[in-house]
Image (cartoon, rainbow, N blue to C red; front, side):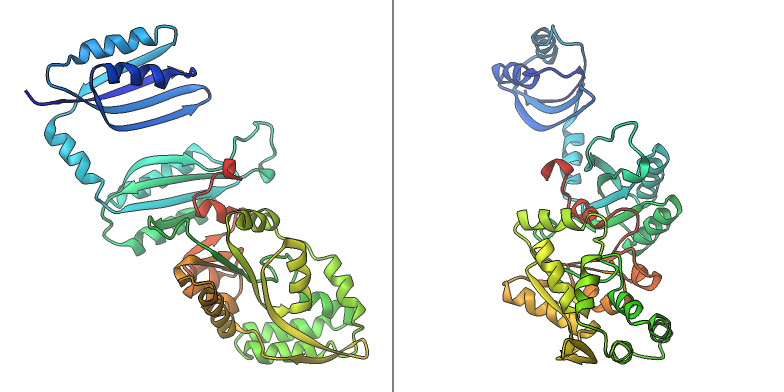
Length: 403
């Protein structure tokens, strides 16, 4: 007589030592644990065990022994036999591709969960694990102050990954949440270099606009920026023309502007957590190194590459020094930093919001469009529009409790 396979499901009040008592009864009867999973929600336990009992062992006796061992606990237990064929199918299913979908928003609704689940089902995916990544939300907390993230892990063959990603992105826009798709691979928690754009990414402001306002040329700078966005000027041309309008601005104004820069939500937490995880960080910016260095000191960022304003006699000359940091240069710098640290590009993350970030976003292992312009959002692998920069931690699979 061959071994018998059973599925045990136990639900009820969670008490310390329950797993110990159950395992002791299994051990006494020579049972093998083929799979185990447990979750506790609001002190209510849900435990599942797939066990193999040796020939001659009685499942009813085991179930009765477990119930006796847990007599002081309010539980419900169910047992079900598993055929050899069903078990073989279950084992084979573990060889299917795994897919990770991260839901990020301010709040979590049943409507959203239902909609995401329906999309996955339409694409032939079977959800087998759901995990809340964010901390528990006080019921009286204002929605604007909250963060909610849930990770779905599903198995199955997908006919078209592009169709799945497109449908998830469309659903996210409709429900005002972010939905990010990832294949489950070894790189996910092995990112070791994160490169940030600066203006409108790490900080809320566009520094060139702040300087232009101080110089009284805000309108002229805005016109040049608009021309560049229409494709009439490339980045280098538009930057030189805008910087030219700053000629004569006292250098002391740089410090004044730096002091009032505002970090985007979650920037401090993200950079701090990345450092704890052993990641290196960099600012790769088409802005100015004076402000990049200021933020580097404030946030403890490892590398800064940005454009250098020329200063003579304590005033801006209206010229730049050195090589301009444009889209191509950002991508080159990302490659260089990765090589210096012995990393593959798959181990890098790039974060930005503008067209001059597209090249570095496209070559990074994880390119994140953060509150980005439509073109950038549509081109990037990942888009974050609802939360702050620290939502990137959820894309990497980290829980709030990991912080």
